[in-house]
Image (cartoon, rainbow, N blue to C red; front, side, top):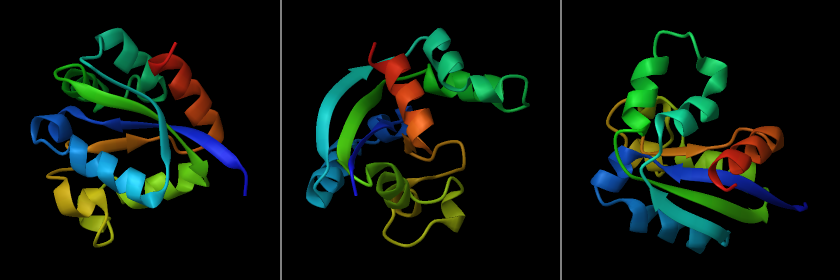
Length: 134
């Protein structure tokens, strides 16, 4: 395996509920390196660019409102197979489909407030890292 980089985010619901430390702890215990980290309240423009592929869908405006409505923690993660492994650690987008022990199984309240985000491919990771860490 080669070393990869990916984008990870603790969403506003995770920040509000004090889950940032728990999530960072899990990443560090797994052996992933956090090479960049920042807390910010993203602008609508950043969120719209991040989720551009969903523009025009019924849930898009609500998603933009949610993510631009509070602080997030954006991270660049580095490690072997980090893209797939971070997604496995998060669990399924729908918390009720997540495996026990995953972040979303344990902490997500709804499909919208599912605590964390992770890039789904190397291409998405490069694009998302370019948006959040210019």
